[in-house]
Image 1 (tube, rainbow, N blue to C red):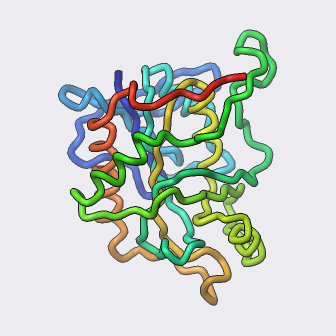
Image 2 (image 1 turned 180 degrees about the horizontal axis):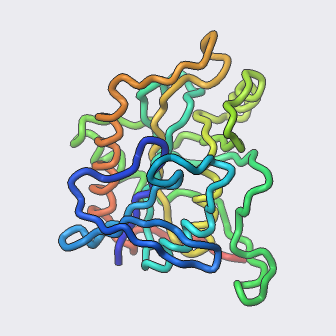
Length: 252
């Protein structure tokens, strides 16, 4: 069965992989997935914002994206996120492996189990361990092979977007123990866990969060090369692990 790389801002392909654009039809809508071909048939790639970054975070069809991966047989996902750094240890161009999240989004379709008996009725996915420890450990183990190092077990704060956060919101997140902030992370891991998939995640800081500097500045210099390394690391981790290495979430 294939494993998946889920790409974020600026991540629209995986250099070196032979893929085929595939429209996957799901009960929640269509999803565009890049399916590996030949020797790369163990990897599929999905870019959450679309191939031209045309879908803002609050408009992403999270359910269609995750359901499409499940229909392709995916059990393991490495998700990549562009984030703002809150923790001083995660500056722009710094990397973090995610260990937990806080969800402050509203108005999004965030579950497959919304009461429809035909779609599973009502279930409650356990989130005691949102991310697979085996995938997280392998990210740290293989990162030096790509000249990378990652902050361990960062907490990701999820806001609606598409606006950036205010300094007061970031101060609140810091008090809650959040290390990075973004706009897409919570829904994806919850939906994946509901369908029995497991997730590892890498956050790439592209700016300091609001209030840390006088004005918010996104760092572009050096970003494309770093993104390619993160993608290569993601593929390497998926190829160095198996579906049996991670434990699916319990549904109650």
